[in-house]
Image 1 (cartoon, rainbow, N blue to C red):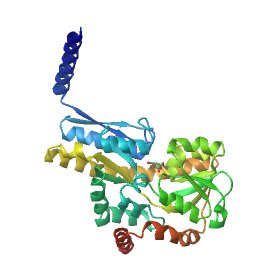
Image 2 (cartoon, helix red, strand yellow):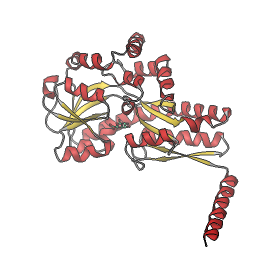
Image 3 (cartoon, rainbow, N blue to C red):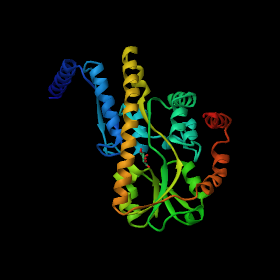
Image 4 (cartoon, rainbow, N blue to C red):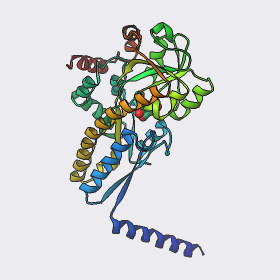
Length: 325
Ligand code: GTR
């Protein structure tokens, strides 16, 4: 009996090998916390189409959107260990493991999205890419995520003083926890998928994100006061498991890199359109946007820099970023 089972299993394995050899398609899985149609999901799908076309169908990419494979912290573990090959996530959850990612997460470091693009497309962006390799990951692309701002269900925020005592969910990074503390409020890091009900039930008063996330995660339904303080212009990152990447033939590596590069241009376009669309949608739904006195927020960030950017490597990077015009 045992032998028969073994034989049948062997046959099955052989059959699936023949099937995959016949279609000659290696499927690479990618995770995204956002729903179908979100600019990052569309950009990775576009990347997949380009890869498929340019490798004559030898590779295909499947995007598991809407956190089907788990929350960001979990999927980061999956891509690092090779359970999945690709992942599109924010850079903030890497702050504890790849210290160079702290730089783009520092509040008010980037003066504008153009400034961020120049930096991430330049030497500092390359330095961060190299640092990711020590975490077993190859950075294929940086994508836009606009600026993150606070929103809450209690009151409009016009100055730092209005932040006092409010409870915010922040993305999973100590920098964000300390930033909120420096503003006189309280921070709880928690997975993205838990935020809506945490606001609804009053566990927290609000959170912080960009317009497209505020819109698509429906947080505007439960926290109507959006304060455009724009504390971080933190890009997204699209990564690949390094061991998987290193197995590709050099020509294929080039195809993947170029497809990722092409997907960046597409994502930036989609992003700009989505920001406008989401902003109009949340306003029409009754959310109010206030623009607080930003200088007060900027001035409060000194302890955050002292604590998180004191490392000499990071200090140099920060100076470099500030010098980029
Ligand atoms: C979004 C980002 C997601 C996720 C989310 C969060 O802006 O695109 O990848 O990190 O924020 O706050 O958890």
